[in-house]
Image 1 (spheres, rainbow, N blue to C red):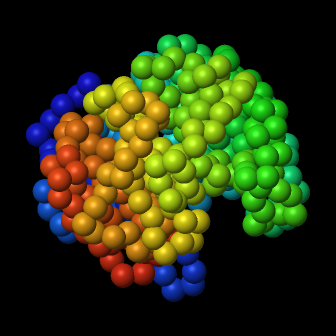
Image 2 (cartoon, rainbow, N blue to C red):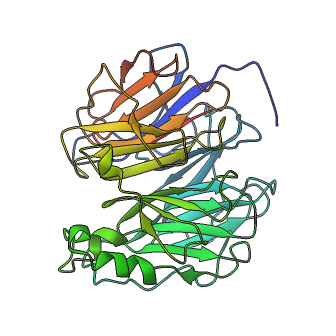
Length: 354
């Protein structure tokens, strides 16, 4: 892993929520409270849907936009658009393979997974990753929201989609298979019915937002969805409800992250809904068996969309609400502060630290 003397940064990505609102990429040095709008190398209108810092070299940062993926090699100060085979796709997720240097996955809308084996210089679409929609979505175009690799079997790659459930690859991303048979079984339970975009009750269970894996539980996948938190212990073949409602009055889950310092520690954002007036950040220290509220003192004023965990300091944790409000602790949760993005950042979707 490359080290340098640069300070740690928090990155926030903003899309245009409605006409007249802000969009783009913002950066704040840990220890400061000032956001810098990054525009060097980026188009004037840049909708940032995801941000990923390379875990081996934190100077290298990727973002996904409506113009495809971009890469920075100087901690986000400047950006280069990467050569992408399909210029008309939006990139909603980027994952750096944990054990294969140079291998990077990108999740797209319309549905698809792309892979680069040279650090992002060249990409190709992975066969079978454009799964047919389970539901008639109308004007909504489904997207690949998060990609994760099994720490024990590095050829096993998982992805979740909004609003099309889960899929997996057992050959490093070369081919993909649908993993929703058991998801749809769960969706038949009345308490897991939800419809917003379609006329189908199973819509809520197929509305998945994030996932993570951990070396502490090989073959296990943890998912954040509209209906809560769910876990598979057999490589996404069967699923169970983690029943996070036992610990939180809010259960709409938008993000779930594994601590880079403790393989048994998970963080998740729990909310009222996708556009609610409040939200929360919870933490589990036992792989999701129990959860406790982690944020306090500064109230979230909208859905908490994203989590950023500092790779160098376990005491530094940030989360972002949709309305451009970033909440952070630099002492392991003892105290919290508010770091407001510029006025008009009402479509804040992603956050990262590095």
